[in-house]
Length: 291
Image (tube, rainbow, N blue to C red; front, side):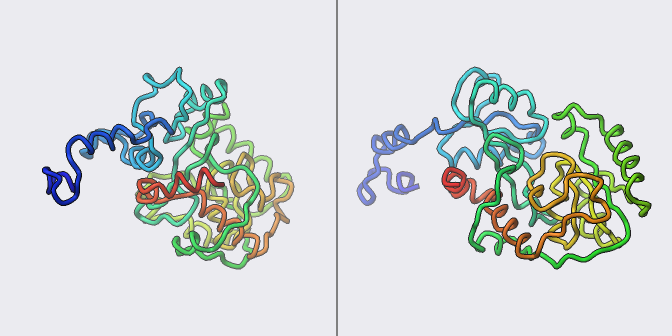
């Protein structure tokens, strides 16, 4: 911009030569992005803007998997259908960063996006974090309260494909297993389109239906339940697992974490999700590499 308004360099000292030198000196090999499962041509974008923002802040480049498949530069992927690319990275010992919907704090607009190194969610220990990033989400953990109904939040088939599981089989098996341990009414909340989920059938609405506990696989619904004051049972890898029961035989007495435990979990998760602006300005890259 300085060169544009002062091309002679008489005020700012930015000439075409110095500008070219500065551009050539920019790091471009920290990370490379590949095409995501989302298509943006119809929205006027030539490339996934979330991926572009992240690599911009990380000092990387945009590309495609076809061009990058056999390299070792860390790669960023977006979308759960990228199993082939994730498996290839793991087999080669290549780092990848995975981007998807944030753990919490999103309303009608998807503001927060989770970014995880070498997996689809954070599956490690809860790290002690300050309050600052959680405060920006306007999310506050609620006290645990019990109810009557069991709420099942099935994962999508796209997610279960990563574990070679058929959704209909998983759901049928879970419902049959529940009968061994409880005669409570069961509500199944099938995954609807995003418009329905954020307007007509939010997770908060579902949890307010006199829910005793929530059952899911890897869905971020487990964390949403904990924040909303409802215990959860996670039957697959899940970022909320440290605060949940992991077996249906605990259905009548699931783990009830304290509000302090939920808050500590949420403070850490807030350090695992970012806005597009934070991706673009390098905040996400700095936090992820200092975790």
